[in-house]
Length: 360
Ligand SMILES: NC(=O)c1ccc[n+]([C@@H]2O[C@H](COP(=O)([O-])OP(=O)(O)OC[C@H]3O[C@@H](n4cnc5c(N)ncnc54)[C@H](O)[C@@H]3O)[C@@H](O)[C@H]2O)c1
Image (cartoon, rainbow, N blue to C red; front, side, top):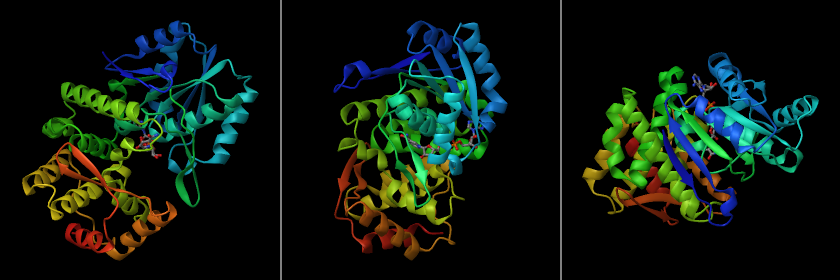
């Protein structure tokens, strides 16, 4: 069992720990019982995770003497909405949950973002504990305190910063994760390798095979990297933006595909673009660029953009996002593996050239 501290210098009292290991449910439950953060817990989960893991989690909580009731919501990004949040709040009230209670988010990034969002506004804020069940959520979404729901026009538009009281990542919960979701989550681990710790890229093959020791090691190292970045810039005002490596073009690919391409799959293609752009600008050696693409391929991710996505359409989306943010969308490049830089002068012509280069 590994414990990683997320230190928040601005308000040390809000610092917390990420606990990672296989079969840690009993330990997590007794920590919850001892901590006394809440009198009762609402275990919020989606219908898929409920069918697979809710019974085991509830049993562990009850054995430890933790009072817990489950609230199951429909699975999928389409349900990460404000009406769904209001609906959950109403159900919590009907169940007599009040400000002495807490929410335990059991699920992937959708449940984590959604449940933490509700926790941040219910009775002006109650504790949330994250128990992530996807690889993406264990290495990324559960750490850092960003919560949110979508509106029809765009993702994550309504949200808060609400740090969890704890994160419990039980690696055994990942055993039921479908291959495609697993592979998509691997993209974020490769990202940490590119922006912070190049040796992570060596674990790509073991990650694809889900070798337990490799997975435990890479999840912990990824969380350590994210924890350090969040500690340096909790509110995303500067350094935290390096976590967006591959995401500028990745988001355009994800949205333009009508979300048929998963987040991590799109970010992988976006990382290939960002690495090649870095190379074209003379920052990144060809051998490093190839290492990024090899690691992505080794975990099973596509490294080319499918031809049904047209460069012009993707470019328009990137430009639209940029406009919405008042031209402040920065492009994360790398000058070497592990050395990210924020570039605000990337031109349309450069993006077009790299999109054409990376499209199959
Ligand atoms: N807050 C953050 O910092 C942050 C960072 C990255 C992503 N996100 C958010 O995360 C979301 C994506 O998260 P995700 O990829 O985990 O998607 P998800 O939560 O939709 O989970 C993917 C699918 O896997 C299922 N699932 C979850 N755990 C399972 C398990 N153990 N076994 C079998 N099936 C399981 C889910 O029901 C769902 O169908 C997006 O909404 C994104 O905005 C947030």
